[in-house]
Length: 411
Image 1 (cartoon, one colour):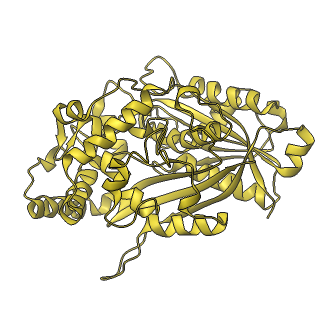
Image 2 (tube, rainbow, N blue to C red):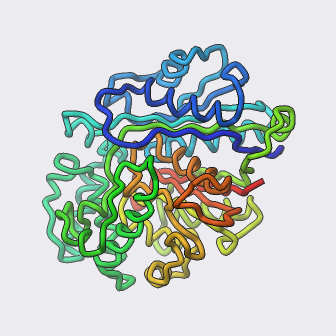
Image 3 (spheres, one colour):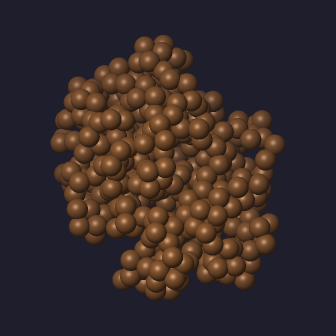
């Protein structure tokens, strides 16, 4: 297995771009990544293109990657279209990393691109509705009903997937269970959202850049108990891209400002047996740490999948950043805020940067690569050398359908 490096990054601002198409958004991010790597499109040997929702949102099915690249004059090379729910472009990254490590290619493009905004909100919500097992949707809704009964909370489940994303109901259920077992409060979730709003205010490519206090987060409209609007990641349009190279290509091209990929692990969920303590995220994280040859204590900066504010606290424990039951203490200590021991989501996270699902995984890796290269200006994590990205997608049974954990290090 040969070393793999990130040589170039590019990203649009995430937001609402009703007047731009997938080709326009992707071209901006890809052009930036190629220029950053100092290469021409003709030097690419393959492309892994991540898009999750075009089939629903624009009707562009089957060949979105080829359509985007042909618009840039790129053809001939192998183009692999990747769809894996919110883990789509993180999966594209993992696949590209493996192909370079196995010496199949030397220079590969990875891109994630998405349009979720529409005048028809039902169409947008249907994308998320399709990220569960639709043949078992009655079981999903029954599980939500049981959770509500168990917690004593109230919510109109019939609105899940209609006036709001079904995943907000799933995250709310996780939140209520986490509150019951760990003594966590709604205010703790608000503290996550407030922290990430501060980080997002420093990111010119974040969808939302207003700083919110804990009180403002709590006072915002309730989406589904206990989640207020700022505790829920917004939908978005946008694109992000990376150029990956082998050590030989890096030497040949004279690349110096690069980031090494220590590991990138993809796994899917499974049906848990009664009493089985294993869960998807901790399992994938352990594999990624082992492959990278380091542990959570050696991380300097993390981007994780905070599609709902409670998820950040839960992933503190799943990724080993905090011991079981210590997630809130870690947050309250300031360790995960800029200036702390291990800042989490310095980009603003999905909560503030936005969540165009096919682009989110790549965007995390763009942020971390730029952090390790010292390019993040006011939100720079000073001295950062080692970083981790966690990106999950979909839901089946009791857990995510897919998770990718990648570990990067300044070369």
